[in-house]
Image 1 (cartoon, one colour):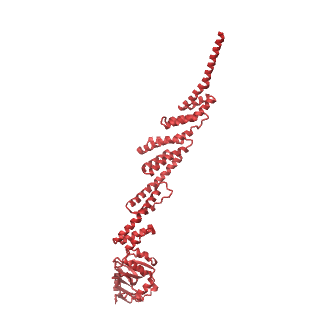
Image 2 (cartoon, helix red, strand yellow):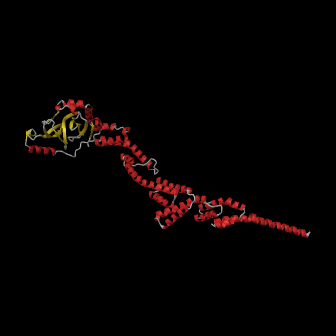
Image 3 (spheres, rainbow, N blue to C red):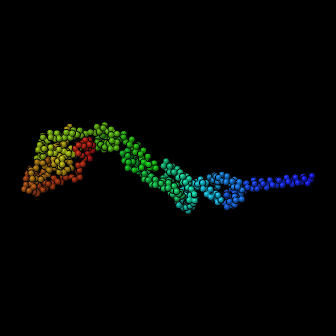
Length: 493
C-alpha cells in the first residue's frame, strides 16, 4: 500500500511539474518574450527584437502582430503628449521597420507625427531668424527639418499639414492680425524648412506678398483721398490699379469696396459742392465739377438744378442764335454791319460762308465771351448786348492779340493788294485802330487812308504784327452741331 501511495504522489507531482512546464513554455515564457519584443523596440533595438520574435511560436508572432498598431500609436501619442522626444520616437519606429515582415510598417505613423515635429522646428527657426538672423542654430534647425521631411516615404499628409499651418498664418495677416514683416519672415523660413507642395505654396504666398506691398501703397493713397473727401480722385486711383477678380490677396475686394464707398459719397457731395460754387458766383469751378460728375455718373446724377443756377444770360442767347444760324446770319448781314472801311457784311454772300465750327473767346475781357462762327479762315463774330446775340462783324482772321485787340485781313481791300488791320473790340463793336494796304506790284502803299512810302508801310506792318500774342490759342470750340456742349460748358479758360 505504501508503494502504491508513493507512486500516486510521484505521479501527481510529475503531473504538476509537467503543467508548470507547459504554463512556462506555452503561456508565461511566450508572453514575456512578446513583451520583450516591444521592450526592445521601445529602446530602439530592432535586431534584438527581431531575434526574440524568431523564437516565438506562431501564436506569439500573432500576438505581436495584433498589438503592433497599438504599440506604434501609443508611442506616437507619447510624443504628442511631450513625454518622449521625436528622436526617441524615431528610434522606436525605425526599429519596427527592421523586423522581418515589418518593412516600412511605420511610414504611416511617421506621416502622422512628422508634420508636428517639422512645425515645431519651423517655429523655432522663425523665432531665431526674427531675433538673430540666419545663425548656426537656424541652419541646424533647417537641417533637422529637411532630414525629417526628405526621409519620409509619403509626404502627402505632411504637405497638407504644413500648408494648412502656413495658410492660417496668411489668413491672420490678411485679417490684420499679423504684420507684413512677420508674414514675410514666416514665408522666408518656410522656403528653407518645407518641401514639396508646402514649399510651392510658400512660393505662391511670396509672390502674393510682392503684389500686396504694391497694392498696399496704392490702397493707402486711395484711402487718403477718400478720407480727405476727394472722391473723384479715389475712384480714379482705384480704377488705375488692375487686380484680377480671382485675386487671393483680398485687395480686389478692398479696392472695389473703397471705390463703391467713394462713388456713393460723391453723388451728393459733389452736387452740393457745385451748388455752393454756383451760388457764390464761381461758375468756372462749378462747371468743372459738373463736367466730372457727368463723366463719372452719366445720367445717374441730375445736375440740371445746379446748371440752372449758373446759366449766364448770354448762353441761351447764343444757343438760340446758332439754332437757326443761317437765317439769323442772313438777316443780320443784310443790315450792313461795318468795321471801318475794312469790312461790310452787306457785301458778303452768306451761303458761301456757312459756319462749320464754333469758338468762344472773350475779346474785351469783361467776362462774357464773344462767339466766333467760323468757315475756313473766316469768322462771323457774335456779341451779347445784355439781352440778345448781335452780329458785330465778319472778318478774315489773321491772328489773336491781347485784349481787346485783333488782327484781320481787310475784306474791302482793293484787288491785288495785301495788308492787315488792327481792330479793337469795345462796347460790343469793332473799331479800326490802324491798317495798311500794299499793292502786290509795289506801286502803291496806303496807311489809314493816306498813300505812304514803302518804308512807312513796312513800319506799319511791323507795328501791327507787334500786337500778335502767340501764346493765345483758341481751343474752346467744336463743330457747330455741338454748340450746346461748347456754350453751356464754357469755363472762361
